[in-house]
Structures are given as structure tokens and as C-alpha cells.
Length: 162
Image (cartoon, rainbow, N blue to C red; front, side, top):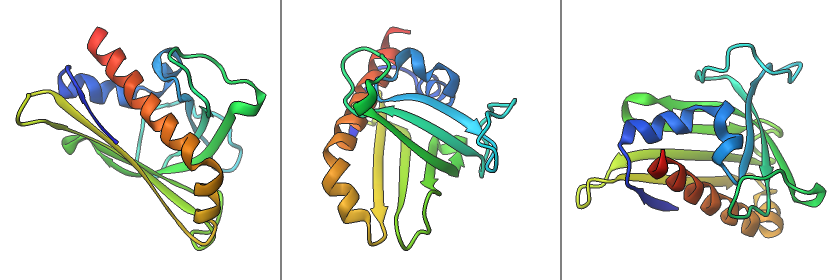
């Protein structure tokens, strides 16, 4: 998914990297917390670094405003930061809930400047692999796509008003 945002690239990057603020603007990813791998407790330092783990809580049926999901709309993932390249505005995280041959997903988010408009281009994709990937896509693929579109729209709205 790609969307153009009428805001400076550094501003959009700063918003993406500020996990504690997600609850205030992101309609899909309601909570992004850096945690200890073993205890799953929040780290005192919430600065993103390669290899750190993230506990993600999502609203699997997001609306137009940030709100907590109902019981049946809750989703979660446990991932680690697998790519962090601030100089080229790219970040990715990879699931660590299963061995990769069973199920793995990599979510990549990247920013660049659109040459034609001068706006910030936000690109977001998730790639699934492993033998359970088809089952996951079948059951939650539509909800994930809706969630990613909602997250992109929320990011655009937040960056352009701020």
C-alpha cells in the first residue's frame, strides 16, 4: 500500500518512530511497546533499536478514530525490529512467534520523497511465508489489509494536521 502525505519526510518519520504516541492517532496499531524478550515486560527505554522486541496490539476492525477494540476485534503480534535505517527512512519488523518454516511475516514501512509532487511517499507492506501463511491470509488477510490502509490513512491525517 502506498499513500502520499503532504508533510516533510522527517516529520512523518518522527511520527512513525514515536511508538508511545500511536494510541493517540493510529486506528489500527493501538499499542506498540518495546518489551523484554523473556518477560514481555515493557523496557524502560522505548528507543527503537535493531533487534529489540515489540508487543503490538491491534484493532482488527478499525474505524475512523482511534479507539480501543472490542473483544472480537483484538489482534496482537510479537515481533523484533529486523531493519532500522533512519538515513533512508525504512523500518521493518519480523514475527518471532513461530519458527520461520511454520509462519513468518515481515512488515516493512518506508518513506521517500515523491519526485512529481514533493510530498512524502509512505509505503507499507507485509510479506508472509511458511506453510501456515496461506491459512493466515485466508482467515485474517482481509482484516490486515483493511488495518494497513487505516494505519496509512491515520498517519496521513495526523502528519498533515500536526
